[in-house]
Length: 73
Image (cartoon, rainbow, N blue to C red; front, top):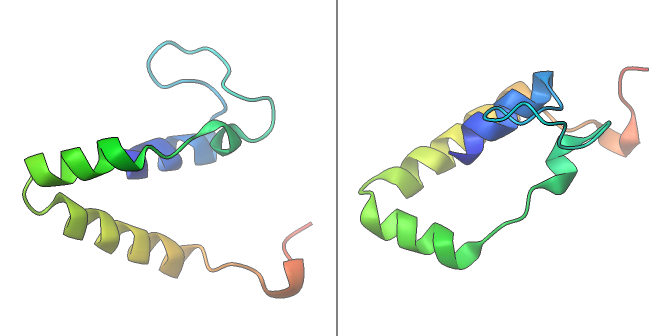
């Protein structure tokens, strides 16, 4: 799922399946949304949309965006 992939890329730049490097510095940059596929999956898996929304809320609670672009340097 998207949540697991994002969490994997927090610690690694490599594909979790084949081990190839996805991107030298920011593998999340290579992810692309497929809204049509996402809607089909949400229709096939009851409750998944709500679970993903909850995971996203929890993610942003833990990883609050820095204001004015200030972060740890």
